[in-house]
Image 1 (cartoon, protein in one colour):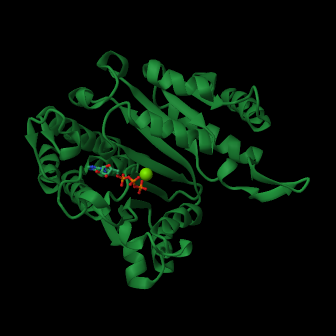
Image 2 (image 1 turned 90 degrees about the horizontal axis):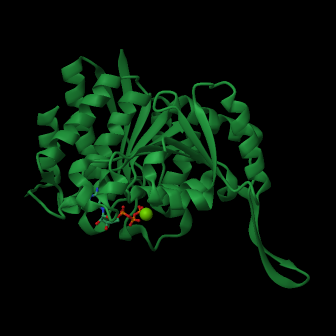
Image 3 (image 1 turned 90 degrees about the vertical axis):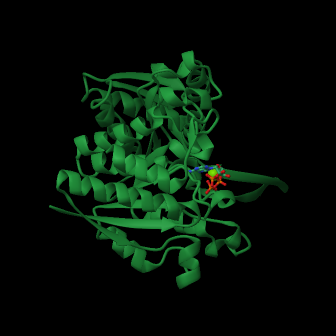
Length: 356
Ligand code: ATP
Ligand code: MG
């Protein structure tokens, strides 16, 4: 079976790390006998330079006719002075919308060989393996009205937290489905002591839970969840939460196991064409220097193999290869707190390929 992968390298180190992910996928294809077909497209600043738009229609069409999308990163100082509609980040928001990406998944796993690069004690983070499921297309970030206004002639402002019940249900269902492939626990994070939306969230979680008797459901208030993530992160398996809470908690969780450069993410589409990208940005300060850590991108590709294509053992192989080079002491600059051997982006990619 041929699998069509849309590849959008984007800007800055996005281009360097994406090359790595494609190389690894090609190697996986050869090794396991899969036919991956790569189609390259532009997004972000490089798309603006070539086409005048941060997300050309050709790119959207190409993605829609693919089985999955791999994205590097967008942005850079070159485009910071542009008007808003000509910013690289616009391309990112638009592709999330155009591809109907309703859920963002951010797995956080512990790497024993990297325990020194976390600000937290090893006893706390040892064995952490959690997955944050963040709602991505609703809530406070999209509700209308969102504007400056006046009340009794005085300055005021309004943002709106709006969800349809169906939007809450589909994200919670996804969380339960994922938990049933992991350790069978869902922590639903809300602020039900204050917000009406959170009350509906909680009710919906209870309803969905009835269809998953093997999965334990726990509710946690978001303020407590923020604290528990730092005090005892091992208690979590799958955490599911609305857009803004998820935005904040997923950044908090990313410091548990070390560098920005290590962490993958997946965004799940209503229509089946998911998008995979590392959580880091285009890192203009190190772009073009061949020093970026390609692991977040390569692990994103692994997550594509598992989630979009159901290629479990292939995904495992990639993750094990990353683990192996870490265990061997290889580090890019961002991880080199106590470097055993400092390596470049291209060396790291070659080592992971060799470890496959
Ligand atoms: P964005 O707004 O796109 O998220 P940002 O400026 O907030 O961008 P990043 O681009 O992720 O964040 O960069 C933050 C810093 O982290 C960079 O200056 C860079 O030094 C470091 N960094 C990010 N990703 C990597 C990576 N893959 N390898 C090494 N260092 C990285
Ligand atoms: Mg950022």
